[in-house]
Length: 84
Image (cartoon, rainbow, N blue to C red):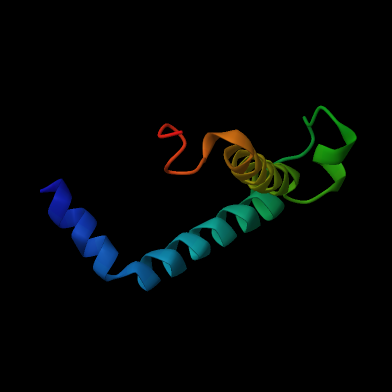
C-alpha cells in the first residue's frame, strides 16, 4: 500500500512540488499576518516578518552545503581505493 502511494506521488512529482511550495507560502503568510508578536523574546522576532521561516530555510541550506563539502572532502573516494 505504501509503495503504491509513493509511486502515485512519483508519477505526479510536479504537482507535489507545487503543492509543497504553496503550503510553505501559506505558512509564511500565516506567520506574518496572524501570529502575535507581542510575546517575542528578541528584537528580530518582533521586527523581521517570518524570521524563523527564513532562519530555518537558511539553516537547511547551510547544512546541505556543509554536508556536501564534508562528503567530497573525505567520505567519497575512488572506487579502487582499497585495491591499492
